Image (spheres, rainbow, N blue to C red):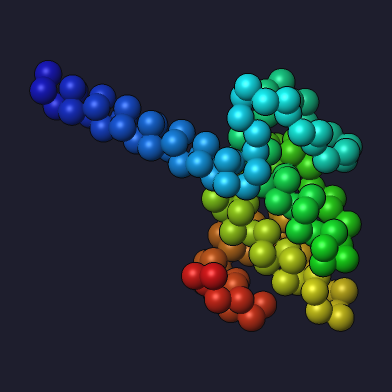
Length: 142
């Protein structure tokens, strides 16, 4: 019985930590508080029906919509695409790790090595994030 209580406590602490980190990341990325009027989401074609937007997906979509245009790139990734990838088994942290790979692959003059988000996710899982970052001249810790 004591082990069960310890496991339940650990599970609750882990869930609380994950929620706290997700909210902190969303707040840091510019997500609005629930009492404020929500900002408009990027106007891209949804590919997965969504009933509730995850705050981390919202923060990532906002980062994409603000970062890609400043680099001369048209964002083609929507909140629903991000949530769809999450539903397919990719964590939001993996998606966040893959975004710099997408940007780095599109910055150079060679369009033949441009990565989609799905390709970047697959590459990161296949060869490891450090190797994938190094292949595009990125620092794995950056």
